[in-house]
Length: 362
Ligand code: GDD
Ligand code: MN
Figure 1 (cartoon, protein in one colour):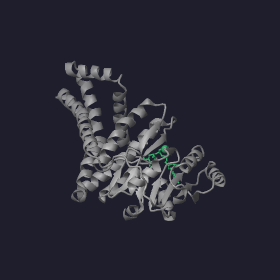
Figure 2 (cartoon, protein in one colour):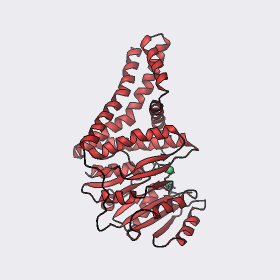
Figure 3 (cartoon, helix red, strand yellow):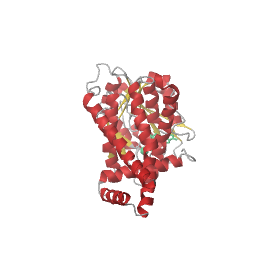
Figure 4 (cartoon, helix red, strand yellow):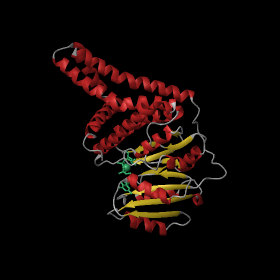
């Protein structure tokens, strides 16, 4: 029985995401709802770009330069930086930068103490004048047309939030591979209805909808994905279109802990959305429910099938069962393929992250 169970778990583990991938490719082909759009409406809306910072002296100057060089009328956006007691030169550097740049409205708000990114975002929201609110991490950059494209999408009927395709800057091939697979799913889901996941490198929201959901959620780690989720549950689309792109500077120090923390945040997000779906599922958009059922299964349950199946297969292989031995050999050969390595790594990270969530939610 151990042998059969092990094989069944492993098969299930690989079958479900493959099916989802095929389904997603179908969405990509059949849905033209988010083809490329680049024309900005005649009257560009006022945009507030919010940058939360905590000890970002290394990144902040490139960030400001990057925002400054966006292809969007400079008198139609403001930049609000919320710093929460950085102990490095972040704030000083920002003031120096402001002195050297004209024609752009940059405002610095200093929160006395560090109370987390979400707290900082809600503070900034009180000062923001824009009809569109764009959040961006200091350690990231946008391609030049991304702000304009994101705003254009937000002006489209039924769209409530927009995020970006990530272009990772990293020496870790694992990270790059991870992005190409997941990136395609994000675009496909966006064509169907909403992306299950949003990115802090560029997360743009309609202000009226942010107010409807009561500001940024304070109790879920993945603030970006969860805000998008709350907006989707109101019936608006939260999309990642092809022409909105961002660069993420992947940390090379502490990379694995960084991956685990992010996985923890995503797990918190999916658990919460799942709870809403169980309690008032009928009220949620059907397409969104479908996407979130798949994705929460893939993030919350599917990784466990691999880990448990793997243990069972090893046990029966040690007892000399033939199929498990063959499976393990195949697995070892497949490890030569980068995609397979990436997949397995991600599964293990998700399992570690859900266990760690039990005592440290950070
Ligand atoms: N004001 C303020 N106060 N800003 C903060 C604080 C805080 O307490 N903590 C972090 N920040 C800022 C950082 O300076 C950075 O600009 C941004 O928030 C993101 O923080 P990172 O430390 O770079 O986050 P990350 O890369 O590990 O996490 C990513 O995933 C999270 C979800 O799992 C980012 O995309 C986050 O934005 C996202 O919430
Ligand atoms: Mn970061």
